[in-house]
Figure 1 (spheres, helix red, strand yellow):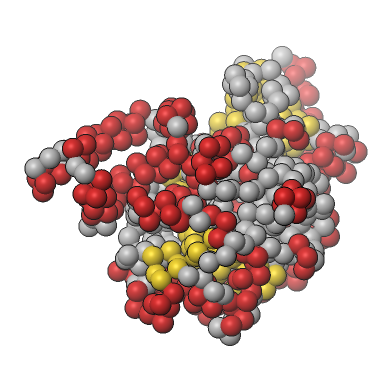
Figure 2 (figure 1 turned 180 degrees about the vertical axis):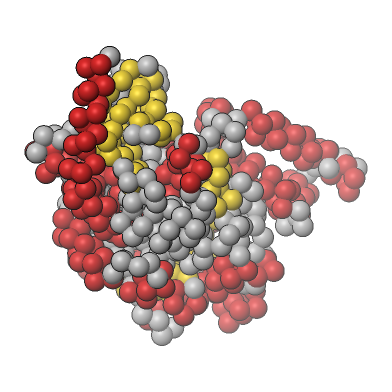
Length: 103
Length: 514
């Protein structure tokens, strides 16, 4: 997973990598103002609610940051062959032939 | 710096450049030298694996996700032998007459465009897929449309021997799609046109291209370039630019002659689009079979088009808003997902344009006009109705909050899906129909070229791609691009003697003087 993310980040200019690093830092510290704890110390439910709040932020900059981060994470997770198997993704070069062969 | 001389150089090998190349074979037979320069690489058939990231990185600019200046849209540009024709779904429609009339470009007749579109539909084996090759994802779309009183239409597609891999957007692994990589470019090469890949044109000077040929990176797909890596100066008596809306505009913008073209880069449109997903209670065929067989054209009435689609795991995951269990549950329902792509028919406006940064790299400025947001939200409501009419148990609509709408709320889609929930930056909006930047018109005050792609004031320079569109096309653009390229090539053939004979004599004399 990290290899895929590393490769994708490697193609981005240094300024984008810097922005992402800053955004992750911001994401970790922002919950302190509401929950008194950093993001890494929140339970999963609070993490989820916090991310959803940021995703619907009034500030396009924050929404973009969340979008960029989740895009990278989903790329790392769902581009793996193991994830293909986990979700039963069936697309294959042999198309209908393979599909009917498995029915 | 290595020097080469050709009579005609074509920049780009997609729907525009590939078509021009094939149409100039008769000039090669008459002794002219024709060159195609393609920035991407040429892959062997066995390298088309259909694997998502691997193919996206091999066939698209920046893996298919070039960001606009404010990072609210990702743009998909093919960068390979055959350009975007190697990565589209093969949909081949003739543009409606009303669109061409609305462009109001003198000397640009609809009948001429229709005739040329028919020529390429025939050349590329465009036809309707038989009923037995239509998968459930497409059938459900037709059924849903019918049940709510709308008439879905079938896409004519340019395939030959389609096995139904559903992997069209990752380059057909069975070579079934009849793009320029399979039809026009091989014909051009058989006819003596030279194609050089991994060749980036940095700028254009007076009948001269400054070109950088890149080495093949370690482990990358594709063959090495046909030329040795290095810096080249390619002299050409006629230059045809066909690098796509962004590529052609940026190339001209970083070239000295842009000073005489005040409208260069303007009029960018892209049919901004996003994916909608619905979950059914039963397994359906969605990731097997041709993915884009039907559409619903509401462009004239409501400013949008709906198309069937089926995307790959990462693209699907990216397009679903939210996180955690809801997101994961929908992804694990992959075999039960129906998908629709909604596209807005945007208009050319002054703010949306292409520029270049200090390094000469393209920058695309694009903001969502209120009409575009209205169209996308309307399209989402209609899609939700189609999904529920087709039997979906829940619909994911990114312009609703929460995004998941259950079947029990099917009657409330107008209320739940609303413009106030359309948040740029949150919704994954993408665009693959990139148009404008070198628009056609009557003179430099309103355009970059005339109706035949001739750049104003520069008789040896032509444009032959979607950058010529003065406004959005409102349908999938490939057949129209080929028709425009056919027109540009016709003028090149007619003008060749006048433009080349004197230039050739001058070049020969200069070489002898040196």
